Image 1 (cartoon, rainbow, N blue to C red):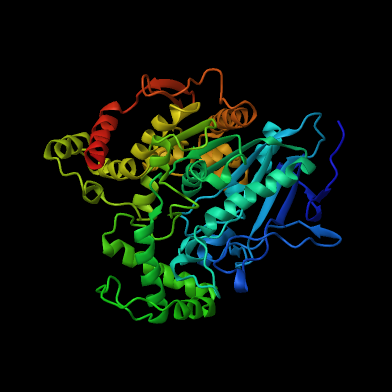
Image 2: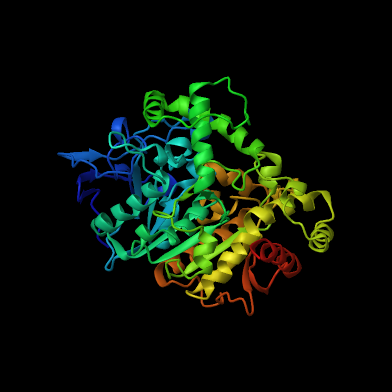
Length: 517
């Protein structure tokens, strides 16, 4: 079989890739390819603009800059961190190193991190193993996070200084547009593009399904552990933007201060947010997270796509309910022990009592309390409210209009089961990306789970890549409908279950019906 050339000519210029070594042998990676102009200077707070073509051949040996965020979250190994900069809009392409007789399916990944952190350089997102194992092309996309990606300052726009909404979401769309323009040059099929992501990236997949500008850019979507309600209504976005600017002007301002301030002058806003450094914005964003928790608004996370009625017309679940999502096949699911990661390492979920705020019907509230009786059940309750039940609702809505496949990921290696963490949030990524054979995941596999991690990796990569190829994950995986609710339990071995945890689902659906009614 012919070997693929490492130099590829894109619409913007030639790029030089590098053949993999060691465990990545048999692959080529092009890392750090710009897909938009650097969003700096007057392009800060603006939608991504076309990249300036470059002369000669661009060396693509390493990842581009991580988006601006706290340094801790850019770790690539012990004592190694990815450089951070606002000039961060790059993609990475991973392919097998052979020339295929037919164009390969393409899988475009958006990372998680609650829209406040993340980067394609995180080792768990290495696409080489998946590309080689399943003969697909994997593209990972850097998008802006935190204030620079998801603070909506558009109400302060003037003829002299424009601010756009939904910058991080627009970055993802621009990344998909880059794929449509260029992936054929890498041997990919622009007609078989699957967008996938985990956590905020899984939420992004659902948001992209609800974004008119993304129409026609992908043929299928995989949403792993999404929080479908991780968006911000426009009224809340205005409150967050106003408070952010005031915190930036006065770092001593008390979180949750009385909101009796006069309206901000747009010229003052422009001067303040343009003059601040990237890390000043991150620090102020961290303060705003505290304000959001104290404010008691309906959207507790200030940095997320804004339902502005224009670029994002509706919340994803509302769009799915109304038949306004792109009608492409969807694979969607969650992890059995989703909440354990947050309970132990990153306390951003509501606790058990907070998750029941707004459940006014005493009969339903009592029913839910009986369904979650133990201490660890309160962790599950929080995760169910945030991840599981909105996901089930989205799947049910979307299944009316397009093929939908639902899973629950139950597999956990021995060491995670022994600690009680189990199949928690993000652990399926080790199998999807084949990271159990990389040094970062080998420790989990070697502790009594070498064989089972190999099998679950094969299972997950087979389903994910087959979905990218054919729009179905497996002949043995039935479509999800609200009539039978058949769910694939992904484990070693896997099996199909009918309406798992149905009692909890029915109780939560009564909550949502009461709220919407």
